[in-house]
Image (tube, rainbow, N blue to C red; front, side, top):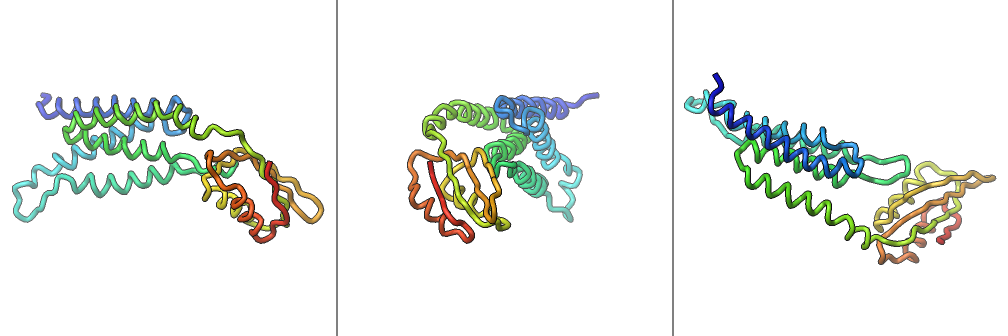
Length: 224
């Protein structure tokens, strides 16, 4: 016999699937690795975890030797797993570009949305997902306008030294400059590196070039 609490849990689980799916769809349309299925799984896991945290230890509620905290399980397990999921999304690609900030944030939100559904906070969960997805979709054209700038080509000649490319990438990252392509050619006794880069509209290129020129083993720097 299915009890009333089972129907309540089923309703909350279905809502988690729907809301997690909406967030996953937003990532899927941008061809992100963590898409529809991943967000649904995370949201459902959050819902189940919150339900267990609230109802899984009810038989001990009247035991004076036991202190029951409905949020303890969700806080301990959810916090650890949520951080693990987010950290796993930050990937360094073969082009030395850091990606995954938005997807990591969406995964953490999916977990919290699952908590909200599992705790019965339907209105909060639905409104949050609607607002977030709307922002993620509508902010795309605004971001494109803010970052609309012709790519530049940075060329530097250097001695062959381990970790030099990583140092240059760190300098560029500090100035919010993205590396879209890298070409490395070895010459006699030196290495020429050509980078295609994009950046915000306002940036002090002279400062960037000086910082790169001051790096050990860098012989010359050019910007086109």
